[in-house]
Length: 342
Image (cartoon, rainbow, N blue to C red; front, top):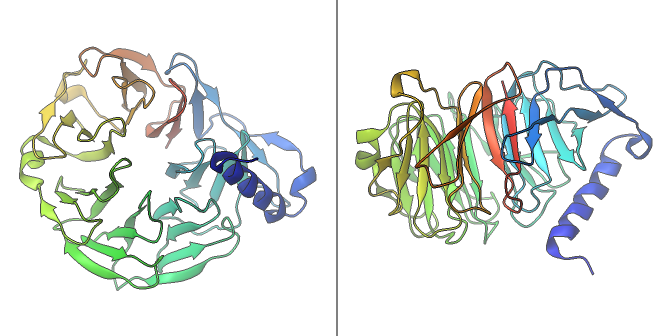
């Protein structure tokens, strides 16, 4: 009998077989270096290029491209999604990239937390929904003039609850899979990231590009402004992470600092780093969910790894001459990371 994890992989794999003409008998072909995505299974000691692309009648090869979106499926850590600057959405499954039909440039992306073939994508005109693994899309939200949706997040316990944020600071909430939207919050700058707490999904965090922080404890209906404590320390916002192994810990990576909160964003401390703030340019951060004290951050060409909660760090070279873009940490395998570059 298939469990939920294997069932989602089977459904997604079957959908991809029918998604591309002749997909069942197409050879894998390898792009030339440099790759856009790399994988390590030992915490950054050694990297392998993830550059096999399933050829289609008009193949889209991931050669000398720039990543603009890089996400892991909430249902299956081996299912990864990538978009590139020139337009194009790719799915990684069984260590091969499948080019999906969508060629518009994605501004934000999310996968349903129960249905592996239901996607939400932000484009120039609005937000579209696909229920067939990206083969076709239907608009569910139309952008106002000069507005672009910059972040989309879905509740891990209730996929009908979707929260989006825009470049104008608007936060939109739907509780019916995107049919009806309300706007419970207006921040002062573009929304950079929206995070549901994986253990307590009624808790939601909104981060803006200028280090505003808002927290909801009722799934996004009401919000508390916690911007002042974070703003006192932070410089240029890069990325935030909720530690799923705890109830209260958050991390924020800024250009020059790695910050930690142990009380859901009410107070923050800066972790000591190997580099000085003036020489630090953090691009992305990750935590090892199988090792509670394992933390990573990547600068343009170096991965920094801590195995003691940030007290000490080891510097490891990244495998590309391009800058790191997003680190993804496999929640089920210690030391298993992906990095995309741009």
